[in-house]
Image (cartoon, rainbow, N blue to C red; front, side, top):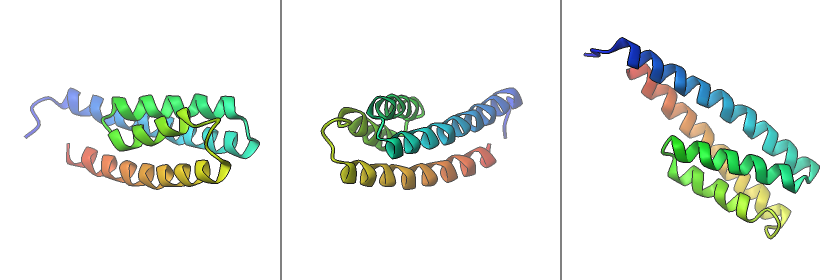
Length: 104
């Protein structure tokens, strides 16, 4: 039984805000990749790395850290592959987080 409905609401609202920010940043990093804008790509990779680290998604944080650190050294094919892997994991994470918040 949930004895603190305010905490439940805050958790759900925080999760939904997090997911909307992630969606926006994923669009931005994809756009930066398409435009070959390494500076913006690194910027959004850094933001996503930090966001996922804050929410405890270690593997996603590590992938975005590799993308951020390798912005100059990764060839476009490897960068696209890592970003595709991250996108798939983000979808899974979002579904898991949505299921978790339903149980609160």
